[in-house]
Each structure stands twice: as structure tokens, then as C-alpha cells.
Image (cartoon, rainbow, N blue to C red; front, side, top):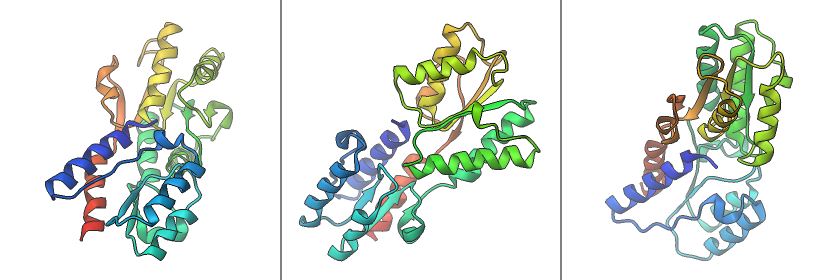
Length: 239
């Protein structure tokens, strides 16, 4: 999971309450990140008298979301990109932000840079991967997919694949993690392997979650304005 969504939920709840609006939050954890459960929940919403829906989808499928139009229910995708429904997408520039984060590592002198990405079913991670590619290519560096871990989740399996990479003779000297929880996973493995951060390994995360200030040394991370985006989403529906 990403702390972005917890911060966004807080932003939605607080802003709705400040406007005297009722709010019902159903997070992706309660749907087990499965699109069928997401569809079941929306089926119930179609028949209810809701003023609008703020959506953080769990896949690249969105036909069931677009059905909200049929029922006259306004909706906004929060930090999601759907090319066939862009007028409803409220997002940060994930690709440009990831480009900036990886460029920071390159400017520090790193050329052997690894990456960690969750499933591209969530389009923001595809955007962030493309941003990493943009930065590497602009600096004339190869995009070595052997140094990039895809479909990484918070699990013991992920610990093992990160450990395997950090044990390689030509391991990356730096990592771009597409969210802070993935960065934390690298911290855990590095600590167990007695690799010092940032002396032996540099890491940049994404989202600026509370995790970035809790771990030591503090994580360098790209700040996502989750609460501000959430407020804009409420305004888009309420106004």
C-alpha cells in the first residue's frame, strides 16, 4: 500500500466535514485490490443518492467507473490517468516528478541506478517508470531492466528479490523507489546486509510519507501533495 492514500483519505474527510458534507470512504484494502470487488461496491453506489465519487482505482480497467455518468453521478479519479477519460483525472505529473527524482541521483554522481515499481495495473507506477527512463536517457545512461524490479509488493518475497540484487557484484549504487514503502523495504535489506545509507547505497523515494522521517537516516523523497489533491477533488464534485 502507499501512504499517499491514507493522507488523501484524511484530506477528503477533513475537507468534507469543514463543508458540512457527509463522506463514506471505502479504501482499496477493503476490496483486496481486486477489480471485481470494486465493481460490486460501485454497483451499490449506482442506486444510492450520492453527490459524487472520488476514485482511486486498483487496476487499469475503468468501464465500470464511467458508468457513473449514466446515473448522473459526478466523479473524479484521484492521481490516476485514463487516456479515454482525461477530463475526470486529477493527478500530479508523476512522470515529470520521477524524472526529477532520478535526475537528482544522477547529479549526485550515480550511474548504476536500480528501481522498484509496483504493478503497472496502477498507472501512476507506469508513469513513474517512464519518468525514470526519461532521466536515464537524457543523461546518456542505459535503461538496464536487470537492475529494475517490477511488480514489487510488501512481502517476504520482495525482501528476497531485493536482497538478491543487493548481493550482486555489480549491484546498483542507488535506487529509485516508486513509493516510500518500497524504499523502506530497501532500507531493511541494506541494514541486514550491513550496507550504510547513503555511504554504500543511496535511495530516493516518492510520496514523502510519515515513513520518510521515521527511518534513519531520513529518506530523501519526492513530496506528493495528497491532502491538497484530495481537497481539489472534493471541490470539483461539490462545485
